[in-house]
Figure 1: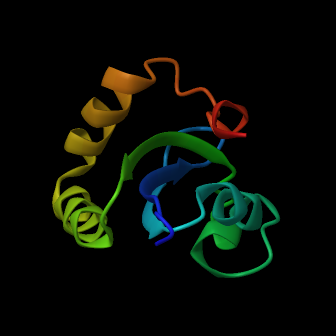
Figure 2: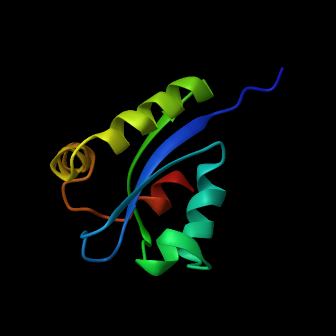
Length: 96
């Protein structure tokens, strides 16, 4: 049996003014795709920085957490990011 790892993540633009929360089973590939700015919400708002992520062994937990974060306020998202990444640095190199 192959063990999968799932991730929820938050992307932002260089100003930290727009946030996107997503879930994936391949965080490296997914963040790389976002950084290419090919299409969609992340391209429209130039969301190029991975500022937050959490890893889960079960997709159900990852989806539940994604919904919880998406249901929170902007302030909740900022506070969450600040606990892990107070300078809003791009964490992409940390996951490579």
